Length: 394
Image (cartoon, rainbow, N blue to C red; front, side, top):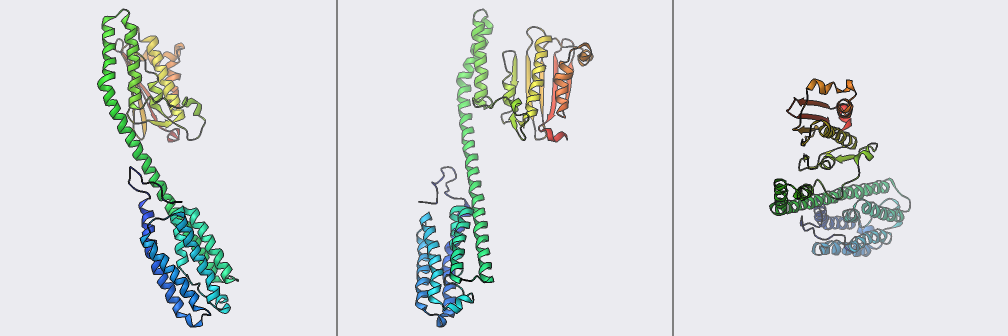
């Protein structure tokens, strides 16, 4: 079974750069570690019981190290075989060395070469693989020495640190590559959506807009057809812009009590669009706390209700959503009859609570502010400014 996955069509990589660098580093480490182990064995070959055993183990280690310079695939079988060579080399020390030398904590035949197998397991399988291979080598060391010495325990701790830390670095690098893949995929989707939007805009949307305009001009029975074309045009515009996708979550008001819950305010406001209400939102998501989204949407709804009740027949309303990292601003404008500003702000005294409670009360509870601009015959403009998160007002 292979450790490496398929090559990515977007990044062109099977593994992150850091993982490939670890593999190249291990390709250098193995031959160097073999030469070091051979030098140590030569230093004490005269005191060995069976020096030929050490020579055989070193020969296998050298052949394996050189072979991996040619064989570039790093499969799970390769990792298991390398760990097996390290374990057998450790046990072969029992045959090559005297019992007295082993009891005194003499180096095993593979010495630091066995640490390379731990690093190889960590690079191939991440932190879990590094810890598992470190456990296997540690058990082999304990069996070989019989009674662990301080040096043995020290080396075992280093093995676990080596396997765990290298494995953690590999896991983080692979997760980073996965995120990069997701970002590139999302970018491809956005480019495709923009291409479709251009095609739709040049054809279907213009046709629907023409039908709507001509239906209004002709009047009579074509008015129903005109309204239907206008509604379909608005729905199609929301879809191609990404603000009216069919997989929109439920009402954000259901998430008010959920810690950390967030909602895209664009989706709520565009749902209020109708023939006499136009909604303009940014192309990018406007993500805010679920509580903020629900309360702002309710305040906008109250503003539109005021337009329907008091702006007069034939009045239209426009809703504009803007946002920056610090907060959001929603503007509701109409071309209706307008009113005297003092009468509007004093409506609560005569029992009309829409302005004071449904709009101002909601926004100020979120730490925001509301302003009105109106005059008789000049329509009304409501500007609502709130922070993105309820935490920002504490």
